[in-house]
Amino acid sequence: MNTPSVDLSRVHLVGIGGAGMSGVARILLNRGATVSGSDVKDSRPLLALRSMGAKIAVGHAAENLQMTGQLPTVVVTSFAAIPKDNPELVAAAEHNIPVIRRSDLLGELMLGSTQVLIAGTHGKTSTTSMAVVAMQAAGMDPSFAIGGQLNKAGTNAHQGTGGCFVAEADESDASLLRYCPDIAVVTNIEPDHLDFFETPEAYFQVFSDFADRLSETGTLIVCLDDANAATLGEKKKDQLKVLGYGTQEACAKHPDIAHTVVSDVTVGDKFTHATVQVGGHTVRLDLHIPGMHMVLNAAAAITAGVVAGGELDKLVEGVSDFSGVRRRFEFYGEHRGIEVYDDYAHHPTEVQAVLRAAREKINARGTGRVVVVFQPHLYSRTIEFQQEFADALSLADACVVLDIFGAREKPVEGVDSRIITEKMSIDAIYEPNFSAVPETVVGLAQPGDLVLTMGAGSVTMLASEIMLALTHHDAKNQ
Image (tube, rainbow, N blue to C red; front, top):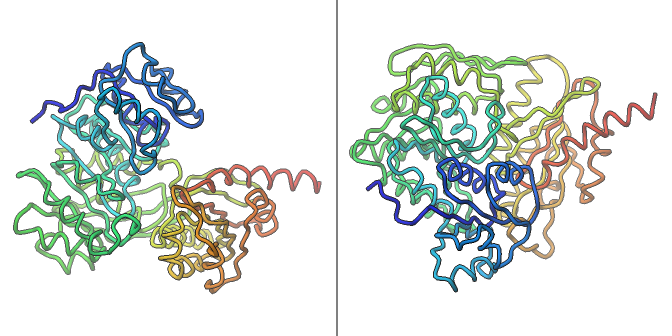
């Protein structure tokens, strides 16, 4: 069925400035819909949406529903982030206006397209972004909605002229079960968001249910280097078309579903090189971003592009030209031989992968240390994975750990980031004073070092502040 189940002519988005919301708002505007929305503060995404014609209020109020002169036909919210007593949601109920989730809206927008959905505990945004850039290079001009801003395109969403729609499938609140993909990628499966799912078994089940939502002619693409994703592929291969991607060693363990094989990976200071065999065709891959995890993400993107009908050489060319996504090993600057990067990693496995990539980059140039500034995200996640975070962060040479960023959670009495630092095998600085961090880093960093701010919260503001502190420190001492 390709007819939307809700009227999308006038759409109001609560929390319109968020990464996901601003993307679907952009697509709605491109399709000619009347768009309004609200958020708690002004931001660059809001300025961009206003320039496209959206009516946006700063602050939530019932009267915001009538900013366009008419009540909206539907109101969109992120139930996880927006409280139910939000005045705009209350007003929508009073006027009998349907209220749907952002995932519901995205599902409606994808109707009629070949739906390419990227799922997994880690790597969704990077893999989705690579798939988009690859398909663009292959002339496919896909529509897309991603959770980050493509560095090259400068946007997080686009209404394309091609037949594919590429998007992330978020499992955090099981909203990925809203979609009916034609091509589904699962990068990895590792227990997370247990505040929602409660048990690892429930978390694993949502990915199995997601695979079951594939269309009859659909394809499931799984990473064979991840044990749980590989197990999912093996379980589904008798009822679905399943393709696996991964290293030679991993693919050899799953010969019935192995399709895209990665080998000869070498990491340099500026590039990561690999040989990739896709369905019997061998190509060379040169990535601008470091890390084995990024090579596997690229393999997933290429595989999805081939299944969607893209030309292999063009897809590889696009991925090789991929310059990254905001907050994914994003380069902020260099001063006195000290490089500063920022990354969104907020789960122990992600932290480990990014720090290993940083270490490979340092090793390739033969000098320097890895200095990480980490902000734990959510009390529940920090408590659940305190030892795993300590082990992962100990891969750095020096570490500064901020207080826990609670986000939607209330503080837990007696719990702070010291439950991580006290378990680390390297000396770590617990720094609860956010504004003191830049000077702390100036005191730690030496020429040749790679400084990495990391986390899903306000820590992202520190990369530019650290660059300023490094510059001012030298100016004062000249």
